[in-house]
Image 1 (cartoon, rainbow over the protein chains, first blue to last red):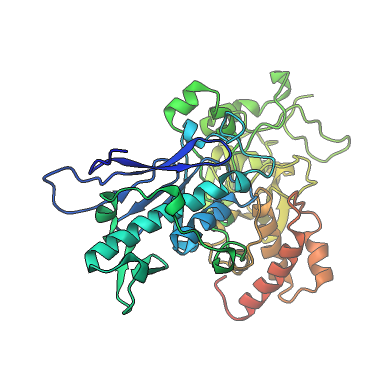
Image 2: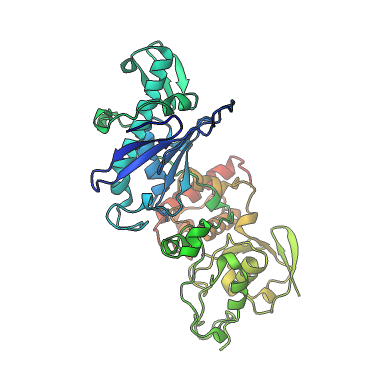
Length: 281
Length: 156
């Protein structure tokens, strides 16, 4: 594998499918530029930034089942980074996020965690290993004497280096082979298997409007967009009107573009109800 | 033209008198935190406060609101500081979240009338708010926690 300075892939094999999940390390800097906002950018799943932000990019829909908390926890475990500080980004439409067994960006069947568990651990372990190697080179010590602790590499004397300060150096290192990765033993788990508060909670408790707007290509192309439509808390049409005349407020709903077809129509009021729902009878 | 007092602001909307309040809130005022559930006042998802009382906005025509003060989830607090929202966050009540605007509004109204509700009070007051995820045990615990936060002088 040829490893370029600014662009390389860490091939992390996914056992079940033989496909590869890559981490692509792309320092944003071009030659000649000086100040370093560096992205250590996972191709599919993860992006580390020099401001110590870790972002996990998830191709699953969060429907309350907790994938936007559970999957970051898996990454956090091997990366050694507090999951509460991990940001979640909703993946665009890309085959990299396809389900391992189903050729689509599919969420369901209780498969999100088992189908991404190994790859997220490997991505985390790979990134961690490269950060440790970068720190070892900086301190000129044996990498085996170093450990990590919540976003820092720590040496035997207790000196600490932030992950964010190591990204550029790490991105120039060769990618460790999968079988050289030292994965944690279950007994060492800090996050997996322990309750975590849901990540990013709050906006759902305040009525904040948020409409997920998928990339234009996704909206146009149909296909995977169908999955996106149903995500988040978009109000969806439960029952499309067969007869538009029965539903006066449909017109209002149509005007409201983000919520197109937002209101179920054709629902009949029970007899004797005090108020009509607005459906002409 | 109908005037609605929503979250402390007066709005004039050009709606037919029989338009349900929920439609007015969502379509005219773009306050989409209040959700549509059953449309027949059976599920509680659309709960808002009318002069402090929890009501089902899907089944109240705007003409019946008059000068009453309407409070929606958006008007409950700035930055989720209401004791109910705080308790909800603390106990991670929400799963999918669809019913939760209504749950929170119902709980907030309950605490106004009963600062120290018993399990039976909670069950009675929250009985009309359905949750398909089944978060009821956490809701009950969080209502109690919210009461505690409120007693300790949490933001209102």
